[in-house]
Image 1 (spheres, rainbow over the protein chains, first blue to last red):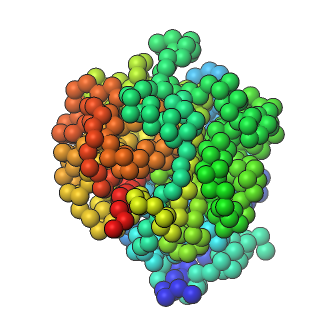
Image 2 (cartoon, each protein chain N blue to C red):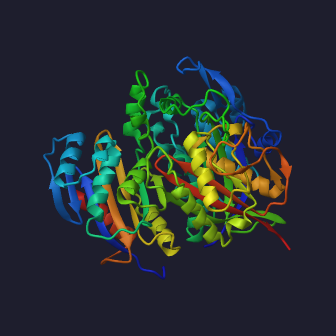
Image 3 (tube, chains in turn orange, yellow):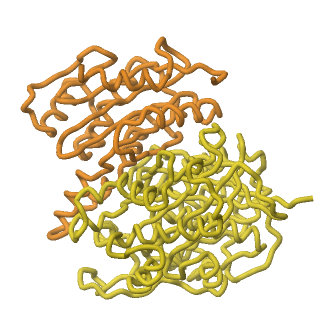
Length: 202
Length: 381
């Protein structure tokens, strides 16, 4: 048992053309809509004004959309840590760069061939000069995220942590981000993280 | 927070397939960088530190079948195998495996006699885990050029939280057409052997290496030990492909790492910098080091000896830093000519024997990430 008790303060889910904030469906498009169009419509619907968004790759756009929803009801300290994970790393953009290699390589694509660029984009958008890490796992691993978030909070390396899963594979996306801090009702536990991650599938 | 001890280590690089061989090369100012002809580059080729396939296959044959493993896997398996060989009683059911890489087996996207899924970084983790029979869940970190050092910090944090008592941290990356073409498109590649912090620096060289180290919460029964006593990372929140001009993230990571180590910048005897030899990186580091009062502390970059080994670099350089401390030796920052950053730095110009107690290792990377590690030499009374 830890002497502190941390809470899942807020969470956001993006999957299958739908965005949930906590358990409320806040945006959806028709099922057939492709990734690019979905991202564009979500950006417009959430009324984000951030021209840099349009230069980003799919993974970073998902990160910006998710963090926008997650942060909107909260004061976010610049020391809030980012702890994200996925399975496919930056493979979608890697494949684009690989294709470009036979013709003309673009630095604007190459720079997105790292999974942690999404941490950089979220940090820039929300002015977070904080602890960052990107883990690769073959599936959502609530234990790893919880353990690491707790270490950062208990050792006071961060007053709050954004942790979660942000995967993009063959234009299929699966995003679950949550804000962990001392505020809120839902206790931070492996079971609760898993349940909230699976919620959308019910 | 609890510290961790750095025990046995291994380096697989163009400079040799053991830490000993690498140290001899570094001490003797040898470089693994060579010119490789390639007509895709404006200068008809590029400088890089590349491991010769034949030598690697020969070395790997002693522990496994080279046909079954990719080049990167062979390098990383050799590194881990070397550490395990010196620790035959290590209980693998209680030892975590932490892996750092930026691009892993990215070369398999084109040229592949291996299954398609082998390009996934978690597969790389499984290959290493299964080869040796590690039991705990493998942790894979892919955080650009700070990955290898961040993996050490992550090991320390999980050990402090008592998730495990010991871990093998292994990092590795290749010189691939994929990464070469990307850095070339940024016009970041130097047409000559790179010159970190120099007036005449013209960009980076890439390199490939694997490095592994055993870390533990338990103090080894030796008279001299090296421990990691402080670590921190911080994002610049400034730009995804260029460092902050004020060195904000690096400054903050060093400050936080020193705070955790409960020492001041004045105690630092040696800095192992990132020193990629790009105009912006080296300038940013000089600014951050000066803001912390580190301008007179001996500093080097190992990029002139290895090139930038990406996800392996901060781990490889931490291992070299460990041996610097153990041996009381400062290693030359290769190819340095004349200071080429706007703030003063005490760049190490020649091999030197010097009493060293505390060292700082730093790294920075794409995505605005920065990392600082503080190492301490502990002498038994």
